[in-house]
Length: 92
Image (cartoon, rainbow, N blue to C red):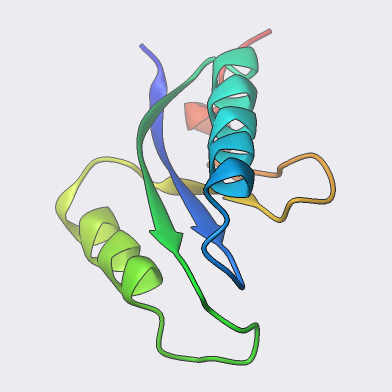
């Protein structure tokens, strides 16, 4: 059974092409790691220093309601990272 994860993207603008690219990165990373990507939450037009982020708020609420216990974050610059408890990590 695949561990369920959620994705999160924060964009300083509303660039749909960049959003699609980052979404594809999240999906590809989840697939490569044997994870089930349930949903991706996006905050658009969000400067880095902004504390209140509606997409992140909804993601955190979803984590409380669902079995997913990990989040993939796309920063647009490098590979993604994720953290699962050892018992939930996919076996190679």
